[in-house]
Each structure stands twice: as C-alpha cells, then as structure tokens.
Amino acid sequence: MAKFGPAGNSSSFYEQGYTSTIQAAKWCKELGLDLFEYSFGRGINISDKTAKAIGEEFTLQGVELSVHAPYYINFANTDDTLINKSIMYVTKSIEKAKLMNAERVVFHTASVGKAERSQAVEITKNNLKKLIDAIEEKQLKNFILCPETMGKIGQIGTVDEIIDFCNLADYFYPCVDFGHINAREQGYFKSVKEYDQVISKLLDHLPGHKVKYMQIHFSKIEYGPKGEIRHLTFKDKKYGPEFPPLAEVIIKKALQPHIICESDNTQAEDALEMKKIYYKMLAK
Image 1: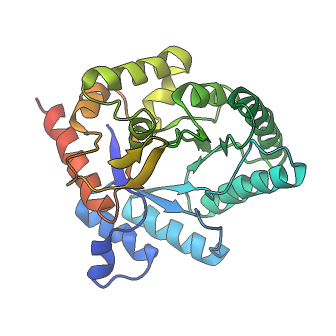
Image 2 (image 1 turned 90 degrees about the vertical axis):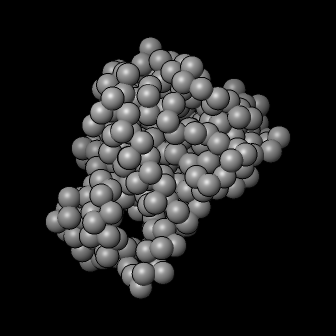
C-alpha cells in the first residue's frame, strides 16, 4: 500500500496549541497518517537527545519518519572545500536520521550556476561518487538516500538526471516531486497519460524495487517561465497538478511509495485527502 504524510507541521497543528514536533507523532497518528518528513532545510540544529526523543515517539505511534537534508547542498560546485561541506551536510543528516529511527534522507543535488548544464551534471555525478565513498567510509549504507527532482530550470534534477544519479548506488532511490516536474515543464501533468509516462520511464531505467518503494513529494505549485515560484494548497484551481490521475497509475502499477505532501501550511490535511482518494480508488 502507498503511505501518506506531511512535510513538517500544518498551521492547524499550532492553532490547536501544539508547539513541538515530538507532539506531531500522535497528532498524525490520530489523523490517520502514516508518515512525517522532518526538515533540516535551513540547518542541522537538532541535538542528539532531541533526535532520539522524536524517533522514539514516532516509533511508538507507528508513524514513519524521513528527513530532508539542508537546501543549500550543491554537488555541482568546483570548490573542494564547498563539496566537502555538501558531503558533510548529507552524512550528518544521515547520522541524525538514524538517531530518529528514520530510514530515508531526501536531498537536492545541485544548481547549474554559470556552467553548461551537461558540464554541471557531470561534475555533480562525480561529486556524488565522492559522497558515496564518504558514506561507505563512515559505514552509513543501511538507509535510503533520495535525490529529488527539482522545479526550477536552473536546478539539476530532471527525471533523466535523477535516474542517472540513482544508478550510482544500491541505496539511491528517486524522490519524485510531481509538483516540481509540473512547474519545471510548465503544467505538464494533464491526465493519467503524463503520470504514466514518467513512472514508466523510471521503471524502464531503474531496478523495479527502487520505483515501487520510491519517495514522492506532492503539492500544487505556482510557476513562471523559470519554473517553480511557490507552493500552494489543494484549494488552488489554476496550477496543479492533480492527484487522482497519479493515484490511478500508482494502483495500476502496484507501487507502494511513500507520499509526502508539501502544501503550503495545509500539508497534513492535503496528505489525508490524498490518502482518502487513493483508498477510494483502490476499493473500486
């Protein structure tokens, strides 16, 4: 079965008087959600003690955790000092994730910068190999690392690029952000056909289990000529993408992804809506 949950806490979590992510475990469980993605996006500032406490509570409640590594990682950099920092951000995210009993770490790979795209992609790939060496040296292989498809033209993270990266190591699984793809490709997802094309490409070029159990990010996203502008809620009727046709493809191909909702302040509510849509279609 697919599993569903939010990236971080909805506004309603705080409006109901909750203040700490450790409380989100029971809150998500009572809503009927299965997952929660904890963000280190702006820095890995959590103590080991707090990480363990969060992990224990989420395990107790039966809500699975994933972690998002810092947003400022850039493996297309040519400065060895900065590459070593990016490697450190990922390995430190993994170490904290393990304390939290999380099994997945999502990360953004790179930005193109001033280089030619093909050159930046090749640099990224070579530096990801250095990351793999560091992970193996630190004996951190027992987890799933998920490079993410990205929403801006200037970012590295097309479907093809993520497929290429995911073939570098057994523990690299794709994080497919359908909102990002839709924004980058200017409203690409219009029907079941487009979702099927993307997932079929993944299945054609990656081991089946990596696609079956992939990480998915989903939200509606406003976009412009350069791609992603900002995340929206499911109430938006202009930008999309819509979830029901994706749910149809997931069911048809018997996938069991982890689906994380990144809606703007309604991520838990919209994750629950996706879960209801999925189970309603599954019952047909």
